[in-house]
Each structure stands twice: as C-alpha cells, then as structure tokens.
Length: 584
Image 1 (cartoon, one colour):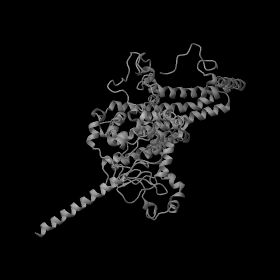
Image 2 (cartoon, helix red, strand yellow):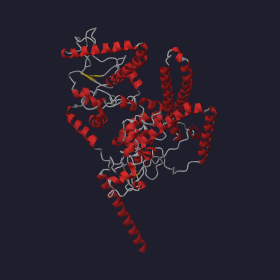
Image 3 (cartoon, rainbow, N blue to C red):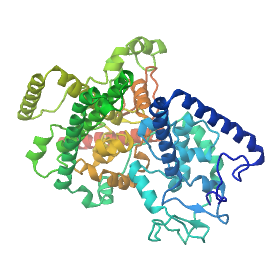
Image 4 (tube, one colour):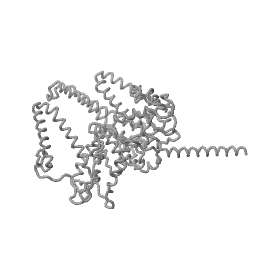
C-alpha cells in the first residue's frame, strides 16, 4: 500500500534519511553537489536569466511530471492491495494509460502516458516499443487493461475530489471521496482473477505483434444489433446544446482575434514595462503570434467539424438551419471502391504496373520511388464527385466565397496574412490530417460490390485520439469517435463518446482504434497506402514494393468462393429449368 510513513523532517537531501539505503548515500551526496553547482551558475547568470530562461520552464517541467505521475497512479477506479492479495502482476496492472497531449505526449514524453501499463509489466523494454507491447497485452489483460481518455484537467479534478482516503481494513480497497463513497466496489462473488499464469503469453504476444497482423475476416454483425445496443436518447438532437457549442467556438475565435490585435501594441509598450530587452521582446512577440496561429487553426478546424455534423442534419431538426450553417455533404458509401467519394485508392493499373506475378522490385521502384512531389501532393488531390449536388447550394457557396474574398481585400494585406491566411493554412492542415488518417490506413479494407455492404463500409475507419483533450473540445470528437459517426450519421457529436463505448461491445475486433502519433501515422500511410489491386472484392493497400501489411483470411476466401460457386450453379439450374418449361 503506497509509500511507508517517514518521520517528520525526512527529505531527499539528507544522505542518512530513512528514505535511502546505506549504499545509496554517496549518490545522494553527488546529487547535492550537482544541485549546489547549478544554483551557483544560476546566481552568476543573474536574475533575468534565472527567471525567463530557467525558472518558468522548470516550473512547467514539474507541472507535467507531477500531472502524469499523479494521474497514472491516482484514479478512483484503480484498486490498491495489501499483502494478503498483492502480487507483482496485480500491482503492475494498477495504473492507467492516458493519451496525455496526444501525439505531442508520444513525441516529447516518449510514450510514458500512452503505454504506462506496458511499462509496469516490462520495465526494461525500450519506450519506443511501448505501442506494440501495449497492443499485444491488451487482449491478455482484457477488462484489467485500464485506459482513460478523459480530458486531462477534468481527470485531475476528478482524482482530487474522488481520491481522498482509503479504509484501514481490507486487502483490496478503492479510494473514497469526502462523503466516504467509493465509485467502485469489489465484486464479492469473484475476486480479481489471478494474472500470474499469463506472464509468458504476454511476452510471446508482444513479440508476435511486431512481426505479424491478424488475418482479416469481414464483419458479420447486423444493423439491428448496433441499434439495439445504443440507447435511443443518444440519437436525439438537442438544438440548445448544439447552439451552445456553435456560440462557444465563435466566442473562442473572436477572443483570439482580439488577443492578436493586442500583440503589437503590447510589444511596443515593452509588455507594460516588464521586458525591455529587444531580443527577448522579439522572442516573446514571435511566440505570441505562433500561439495565435496555432490556436486559431484548431478553433477553425472545429468549425469544419461542426459544419460536418450540420451537413448530416445531426444538430438541428430544421433542414434550412442545417443548410445555412453547414455546407458539407458526406458520402454514405464509405469503403466502396465503386461508390466512395473521398480517398478512393489508386489501383495497380493507374500506375501501369505489370501483373503482380510478373512484377519485380524494379518495376515498383521505377514508377513510384522517383516521385516525391507526387507522393506529397497526392494527399490534397481529391477524386471527382460522382453525385450531383444541388446547384443552388453550390451557387450560395460561391457567393459566400466571393463575399469573404471582398472583405479580405478591403481589410488589407496585413490583416489577410497575419490574421487570416496563416490560421487558414493551419485549419486545412488539421482537416486534411484527420480526414486522411480516418480513411487511409494499411490495416483497413476496401470492398468492391461483390462484398460491400453499408455496415462493412461504415466499419472502414479508424478512431484516433488526435490532439488528446484538445481534439475532444475544439474538434468536437471528430477524431475520437469517427467509427460511431459512420454508423449513426445523425447522432449529435456530443453523444459520440457514449455511443463509441456501447458499439465497441458489438463491433469487437472490428472496432478500429489507433493511438499512433499522427505524424508517424501520416508517414506510415503515405508509404504503405500507395495502390490496391485491380481484382478482388476485398483489397488492402500495398506499398511501393507491392506488399500489403494485412491479408484476407484464407478460410473466408474459400467459403466466399464456394458460396459464389453454389449461387452460380443455382442460377444455371434455374435458367435450364426455365428453358425446359418454355420448350414444354
């Protein structure tokens, strides 16, 4: 149970403190010398350097360290064990994976929050193998794998209010709040299953996960199973709530514009006299502009996400209201090679590649390897729309674009560049990133008409915790709950988390979730999602070498071929019988 209680006055600077073993004392002395040396250097560099270059970043460093370590180990749903029930495996499972800061946390915090459960079980495994190990141990841990995508600051608030104390008695205990209530209780009929027997299989599956992926079998669940699983109130529109989110985003955008207008005058006033050095002033000014561009880009992408839902009519009952507030039209043929409108894969014949059996490594390299610009810009080249969009809405859209262009012209070049164009580029960056990653992944199939159904196509997308809590707040769950959106197009986005939680039990292994950092996921999709074969009713992307990372299950292919053969035979038999009737 936690750390032992030490006498008052115990600290980390006294080498004879009961915190340390005898053999650790010399290391504590060396640590104290290092701290004293750093303090002397900072004193010599002066107060300005100490405050601006060291103290503030140092405080932020400690903020992140305390935040993620506290949230790893303090959660009202996580048990604590006393010696009667504690084992290493049970204790190791007593932590929570969280997508802290999204891809930023993966990149700069080295997976420490995203893959902390794996770290507990494999302390000596390199952090960069954490995602693969996490993926492997989840099917072994099952319900004992703890993952929480709650926005970080709300999770902090929840833990502070719900994790106050534990009872003095009991071998398996949960935190209680100020009212003495625990949010989770121990199942009296069956205590936690023992984890000791799974240690070897965890290691084996971790290794297998790096080397191979599970063969693909198309989903066979029904629409009725999905709709029966989702409570009806989650599909109902709430105009007041939708309006709140719309006004909230407008308010954010206006506040950011107002803040940006203050940057130059504030800098000219030496930041109210606090910063007089021209060098530091320019750094702070540049940081403030960069912050504005980034934040306004995220808020602007949020408008796209709201427009996306308005296009589906999921926020208001009134069709004109949805049409006025959102210009988007979304395809219901996702995953279909013939009918999908966005991110339809190129085929082997597109690149004039020889037949798969005749192609060599050189064939692929000659066509694909020498086209970096094409590879880069293929992300932005959309396929021609195959459906007729009502002309009046196109004209209204053109009119809106014309009015916005005129307004920007009269506001001048400075406004256009600093306040509009750069944030606009960021908006497009987020839109393209999240839509591309949702529909282009080497593990996701594409179907031709022989195997395509709405349900199979709807399952052809990936949930990603893009930007962590910021993605949930500003991008309105569009990255986190996109699978649920495909199945329930008219469900309000603010019910997405609950719908996702419910449908995962129905979709099972056909629910696609990937916490890979977005930049690496982009690189992976660019390099692994190059083309698909011209033949086959279920196809996966192949890379420049003509290799797919996932294959269709052979047993399913045999069954499908046999079923198709039986259908053809039945058709021939029926035709012969019909001809015989006509002769007779």
